[in-house]
Image (tube, rainbow, N blue to C red; front, side):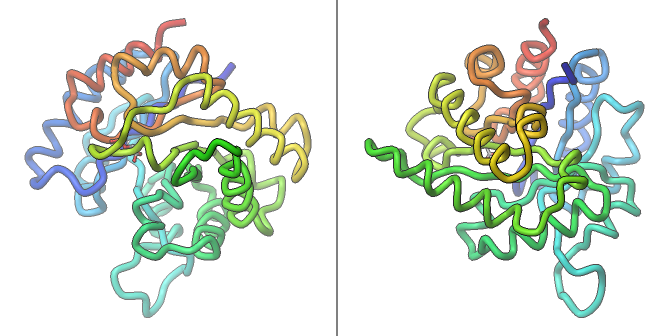
Length: 254
Ligand code: PGA
């Protein structure tokens, strides 16, 4: 088994570099002591370089929250996969529901996924339904998102791919609650089935799948043990180092 992957998605927080440095330094203190966990902190772009200079070793890396699909040129405000790779960034989140809410289409998610994989980055591809209906139509939604995102992605690029299952109703302050580990387990089986159809069974079984949505120190362990996932994508709880440290320690337990 590989390491458990815990990704901190800071979103548009914190407000200052000083605060960002404090949170990262505190997080790193715990993360670098853990043998079984790969931690990746994804801060806003403006802090990436500064925080990267604080990285020591490989156990706690800096990642990016987004990437653009073109390499360079007249694309105001964008940052390319090549730029990330040259800056030494190894992980990038693609297709987060908060980006999709502001207009990111399946086609764009697909282009970003391909561009980042071609550049050798680990892509954390987010999928997840808006609502869970009793007829389980949400599975069709997840299938569509996955199939669109992976259009034209050859198998030889998928070894750097990770899928983050993030049901939108479970994300953020407004969330009803986190998913249940049993609900996530079911979805991971479904995701693996789609991957097996598209690629092959071995690839599908080996694909790291993460859960995200209201992860905290109380439920982290349950998702890792019973949710069929190999990691977690953590929003709010990753901004409080003491809380995040508890999640990391739970993930490190054999
Ligand atoms: P949350 O966010 O942990 O604050 O619910 C998770 C995410 O959006 O990745």
